[in-house]
Length: 170
Image (cartoon, rainbow, N blue to C red; front, top):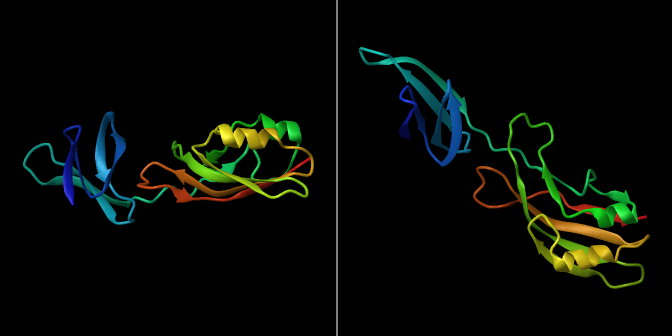
């Protein structure tokens, strides 16, 4: 573990990646890991040495976000609404902390009636040129698959796979 001073009052014993913590008006970056190993915060006494208080807690990984197109995770979607979307979003449903996850990329597969599937790999959340061309072809009866969706959340070293989506155009 590493002992870190926070605002001159607190010390943390922890390992891993930095997270921002704010204690009683003091802000500092503390290395913490999401390995579920315990972390101890220690408040030293003002004089005479020793510690006034300590608290042990666990640091948990942010849960997997949910991929959505507009407000939908898949199913039937109108042609106009589908074409109006700019890309895929990552949402943390029922998560109490202010954290933003980003979409790193996905595979978009377009299947028109009686046609071979057309596949493009899209980097990032927003449609690239190739993905936008496929989306603009959408017409009733077509199916679009968003596969191999990867998202990255604070504390992640690499992207994590999240849900796929399938949309049938109406």
